Length: 173
Image (cartoon, rainbow, N blue to C red; front, top):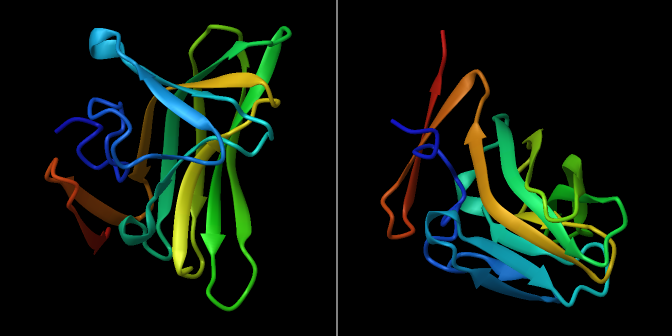
C-alpha cells in the first residue's frame, strides 16, 4: 500500500492532465516532464485564483485530514511568495465560508512542501479543496496534492482509477 492509496484527491499528480481539477477564474495548463509533470496556474488577477477540486463526497464529519502538496511559484516574484491551501464550504441557505488549511512561503522556481490539516464539524452542501496565492501576476506551480484521513476514526479510501472513490470508516480502539 502506498501513501497515495488513501488519497481522496483524484488525479493527484496530474498523470491524467487536468482531469478532476478546475481552474478558478484563471488559466491552467500541464507541463509534461515525464514522471515529474506539473501544472502552471497563470493569468491570475486575484490572490484567491488557483486550482480546485470538489471533494464533497470524499470527506466525513469528525474526521481529520492531512494535506501535503508540492507547490512552487514562477514569474514576477521577489525573493519568495506565499501559497495557501484552503477549503471552500458552500451551504445552500447561507453564505460561503472558507477554512484555512496551511501556507508555505516558496522561492521562485523551487518546489516546496505545503502541509496542513482540516476537519469538518458539519457537512456543507459542497466542499471544495483549492490552492491559492501568490500575488496576482505570479504563476502558481503544482506538482502533486495528497489529502488523507489521519484521525482516530480511520477513513479507508480506495480509488479505482476511474474516478470512483469508496470511503469506509472504522473507529480505532
